[in-house]
Length: 170
Image 1 (cartoon, one colour):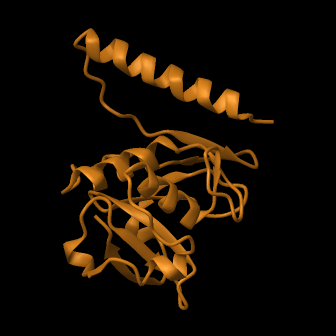
Image 2: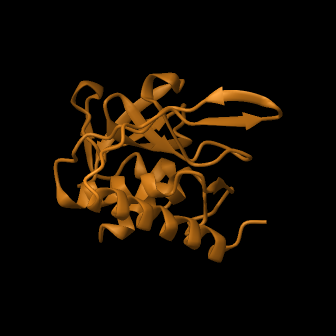
C-alpha cells in the first residue's frame, strides 16, 4: 500500500539525488524505463520535454511530470492518485491557474490549438465525446493518467487513438 508519506519520501529522495548529481557537474542521459505488467515487460517512453512558452505552462508541465508513477484512480485529483483530468487540473493549480475539473469541460476552456502548433503545457483531448485529456510536453509526447491499474506516464501523442483537439491554457 502506497501512502502519502512513501510517495513524498520518494519524490524528496529523487529531488535530493538530482540536486547532488547536478551539483557535482554530472550530466545524465535518460534511459528508457521498463515496467512489468502481469509478468510482461514493456518499454516506457522516456520523457524529453521541450521548454514551455510561459512560466505557468512550465510549472504545469513540471508538476505533471513529477507525478509519473502515481496510480490512476477514477475521480482522484492528487496528490498521490489521479484520473486524467485530475492530473491536468492539479498541474495547472500548481501554476496558479484554475481550470475545469472534467476532461469534457477542459476541452472547451482556453484557446483552441491546431495539432501542428502544439506547445508544452497544451491540453490534448481524445475520443468522441471527449472523455480523456493529457498534457503535451513537447517532442511529440504527452503525460497522462490513462486508466485503472496504470500509473501516470509519458507516451507518444500519436499512440493515443481518436485525437479530438487541443487547448492552450497558459
